[in-house]
Length: 133
Image (cartoon, rainbow, N blue to C red):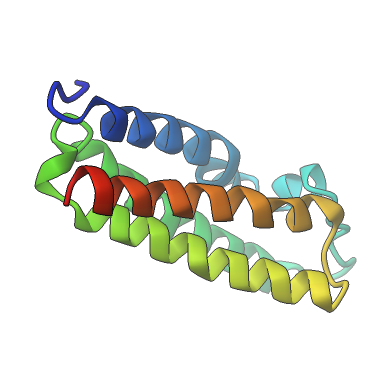
């Protein structure tokens, strides 16, 4: 399952997939308001249908990306665009989280994620351009 040619790239994908599946994709898809509470959000009282809908949509998109990435763990060199995708997702998430932090519109856990997404994005870009060419 781990590429002999690109073991670091394969392991990066394995760890990323496992983490994002457990911490984001499945909880957002299956228990979005519980997930929100875990991260320090205080969901509004009343009708939360739209919140749950958007969270589940994001969880489904994350799951689709994860399932696509899993297919290429054994040969990450054949799909360098996966690392582009991971990097672009991370750039988008940094922007969203910085915006939320500047507006003071998110819990501390979301602000801490800025560093996390920045690191994952930089590692993905490094693997893409330095290891896979």
